[in-house]
Image (tube, rainbow, N blue to C red):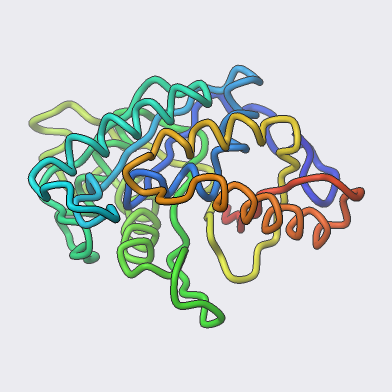
Length: 244
């Protein structure tokens, strides 16, 4: 896979850990890229901080929503070649904050999976929109994940119980990809995997009152991203900021 600057971005990358706030976050922002990674033989695992219990658009009983959304996310992950999906416990949808506990729980997953790359929500709010990527849970998870990558996961003296009680040694993550950033610096052509992105999104039936309208809007939105990146007409792209 080539970046906007023409460099190959995936040399040496064998494992990617995606850490996001809610079921469907990955699929709206990055599922086309994830599908390209798994097609290339990269192993990808998902960590969802919440089960999306505050989501939905109808009268589905609230107590049933976490189970529904967990099943939807697992189906969506399978559509793009991901078969390892973890959900953290104790973080209600809509009430995620950057705490020492959240940093530790994400650090645990990083040390367990030992990824070459972490993909996560943007910790930066877009002031040009009120919805979408600017959900406060997204920003909290993006910030907590950043702190889990550095300094926590690589520091053997951070969260010492992870090593003493669980045998999880320090691990250094070389780079983080942020999805949903206001000013992205990297674009991935997902034209060939867009249909699988849409298949993943359609798995989230409890969140999509009008799936066809959403698909049309996403085609337009990600087509504009490709145009912004200077790709040929008709291409579709997802966008990120990369920190190393």
